[in-house]
Image 1: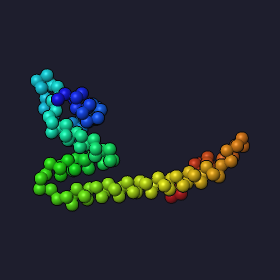
Image 2 (image 1 turned 90 degrees about the horizontal axis):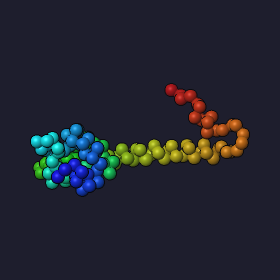
Image 3 (image 1 turned 180 degrees about the vertical axis):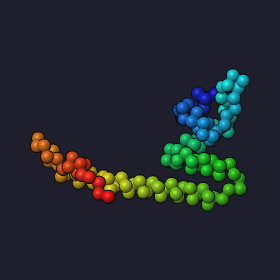
Image 4 (image 1 turned 90 degrees about the vertical axis):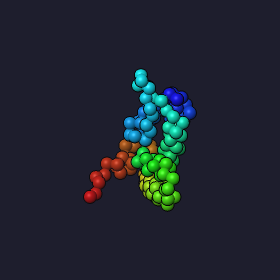
Length: 131
């Protein structure tokens, strides 16, 4: 299967497929003319990567998950640990976004939004960081 067909089958852009090859996540064979030839296993791995990335797993976690997927002697605890770590990172990001939202909401409520030049939003943004 050529890269365009793989792109259609997996929903991944060809640029992403080439990147996954570059970082060693898939290794398609090459024809004499240098064109990539993807096996069904390659397509399956790329679909696996697409789903993993859609859940926000970083590339290195995807590499680990793929290795575990290929390892029939794997312990599901290893897979679960990767997923739990990722979930903790998502929870941390959500907490940070919540705090950002609350701060911005407070600033917006404090701004009159009229024709006067004074603006609490700009005043807050201009404050020096305490360290």
